[in-house]
Image (cartoon, rainbow, N blue to C red):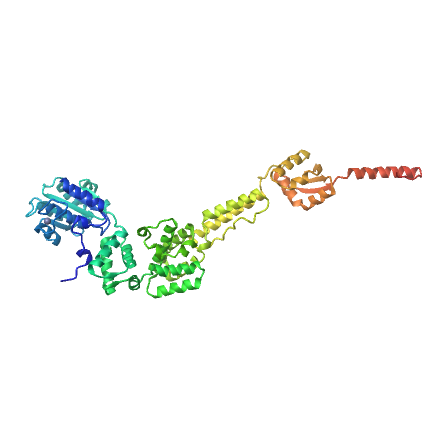
Amino acid sequence: MAYEVTATRRRPQLFDTLVGQEFVVSTIKNSIESGRFAHAYLFSGPRGVGKTSSARILAKALNCEKGPTPYPCGVCPSCREITAGNSTDVIEIDGASNTSVNDIRIIKDEVLFPPQSSRYKIYIIDEVHMLSTSAFNALLKTIEEPPSYVLFIFATTETHKVPATIRSRCQQFNFQLIPLETIKTVLKETVDEMGIEAEDDALFWIAKEATGSMRDAYTLFDQILSFSEGTITLDKILKKLGIAGVDSINTLIQHVCDNQGEQALVLLEQLLDSGISVEQCIKDIASYFRSLLLIKRNIRSESILGMQVHNISDRVIASYNEEQLEAALHYFLQLYKDIRYSISPRFELELAVSRLLNLANMASSATLVKQIRELKGTLTDSSEISVNVSPVKKAVTPPPVKPVRQKLEEKEQEQVIQKNIEPEPVVKREHIDQQTISSLIQKMAQQRDSAGLLLHQVVKVEDGGDSLRLVFSSQYALDSAKEEMKRFQKMFFEHCGFNGSVVFDIDKPEEKEVKEDDTVIQTIANMFRGEILTK
Ligand SMILES: [Zn+2]
């Protein structure tokens, strides 16, 4: 007997053996039990999830000698004919190769004849969306008012391509992707039934690759079975199919975490030399980072993760934050697109792995802005920069985010500087007098600027238009002011619009008076040829 592919051999023959479509199955079973079934069904959903199988089971359920029943016997002539695909009353048509209006006309003529040996004449039209518009139109009338013994079951992977006029005349069922765990369980049943040894990891891998399609899982299973010599292991699969296992990627990323660039690149070379394509390697690394990200977000379901959690190193999980993992995932997804235009995809991948070494230092623009805000807050709160402020990490790693981040960083820093140096906008030139000095003292005090303290010592102001003379009450104030000359010029420019030169002087009225007095007394003494006697 010729080898029968697993998908065909294990095609479900009963609703109860149809996996992953519980809602559809229970609804159809109920409608058969209650005798309220439609005359046109539309089964939509992804490929390989059981649409055609369901159509055949439904046909059997309706035409079974013991039926209509949700549990067709499988042994009566009708059931056996349908299973074998040679029932004269269950007609399967491939919509993809019978698209013309003539094909539909043949159906229209045929439906006039009642079923030969069964209860119903059932048309199963697969890939119905492939029919031409005129074919659909020809079909419309028939499905609207079919003879009571005729039933249509349409199947499609692309519901949106089926005209609304047809859809609205059908009872529609949406088939779902089959969960990873379910596929794995079915594969386990299959290997047990065949008496084959298979690693749990290997079955998980096949189930994951099938991405929700049972037929794809069986096809892959058959392919793997052909080289597995009775024992299916993940190692054999990865080697034969040229795929980097999660262990290899784990080791690679661990090297990256430990900043061992050389080991990481050597391992990458080994992976590529072993026959794994650059594309596959990028896909594997991207899917690894995706899993890490999901784990960080507390998702532990293996069917969502696409890999088994115990396979992922805790150390790697702990090494990165969500933001960094997002960036890495984004980077590798982008890389997959970019390599199509690259002169050397291999170089691109090496560069990417090399850049990953900086991943732990990477901070997003949002984080940088936050850090700068904190820094800004610290700067404006006190004139001294607190050493406790976490330093803004230099933007490194993945280039897609880099320029934006640097720009933001620079811009924010500029703002910080401006905020501290130029607290007020430039004002119009005003005349400076003692009153101006008093208001300046207040302003400076508000801004906690120590220059204001020196203004307290100003006893006289002379505004000479393009020069300003400030007279201080003490030598100490004068000396301090001279040291702060630039600050004074800036202060008067910013607050009074004064842009000329500032001259400082000291007020010594008492000394002068004493000197003058002394001179006068001395002159008088000289006039009288006397001498001055002190007490
Ligand atoms: Zn039967």
